[in-house]
Length: 373
Image 1 (spheres, one colour):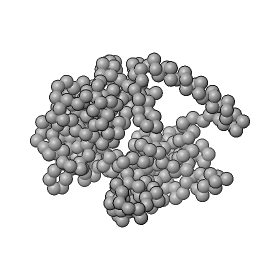
Image 2 (cartoon, helix red, strand yellow; image 1 turned 180 degrees about the vertical axis):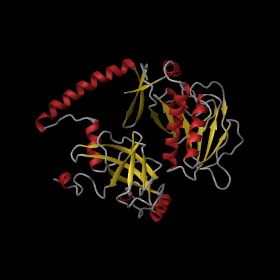
Image 3 (spheres, helix red, strand yellow; image 1 turned 45 degrees about the vertical axis):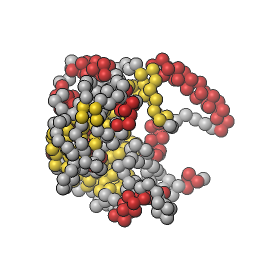
Image 4 (cartoon, helix red, strand yellow; image 1 turned 30 degrees about the vertical axis):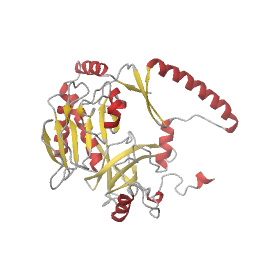
């Protein structure tokens, strides 16, 4: 169960944080998270064209930090006001990304967002501007985002009403603030996501424990045992198995992700066929790889930069320790230009670059013999 904070609850979290942490530090953390998400969406920063829509409040401050960091990485960034004339992203060459940092979850009023040129993706900061943080109701014409970076915890307005449709993929980023107590929680199920009151969440937890006991009792003759999510993560990294929302996302193509064998181009026309054919012909712009990282005190978890011969070549999507093979492993995307290299890689962990070697096959049971036994 993930916490969901109303605007009042989030305001209390912010107020408590400001008692010990300067506002500038919190804004720097949030803006850095936005910049990293933008780099991931863009597949890099150098040479990319980005427009950041910044209001006058803290949301706009987050956007300006992101703009500065993206420019430092070589992106061509323009910062515009919320009332800037559109369409944003038109012209030649076109814009690669629009970052919506106009207004935050506490916005009151109506927001008529500037038009964005067709095909230009939008990354929202905290919530699509003009959407209520508590109800998800849109006031005006907010921009539809492909992804929203929100801080500390999800907000109700991202999960219901117009907000659920406009937010795209919601990603909660930890900027060092504890969420505290929340009146509602967020669950993701096989067919969607659910908001539950704390009392219903407690009831569900009790029932879930009873169901688990029944399953364990029924499975005991068959050797059924409980293992944790971290164990599953460790084992799938050893097999170089990707997971949805990390290695497999709409921003990655099937051939880039190593899933081209599941695309049957012999079929009649289907949604995405033209894009799949083009990606297969070109090879895409990046490729998913697995790295053995020379690390003993910390492992990658995701979003760390991957270097090759001293230059940023990509980013980590997920990582951890492979207990069966005794290796620190990281999966991530790198540019095609270096994807076939074995040596020369580095992964930045806690501010220090650690040498890494690309694995040509899975670290554990590469032939799959154990799986078929």
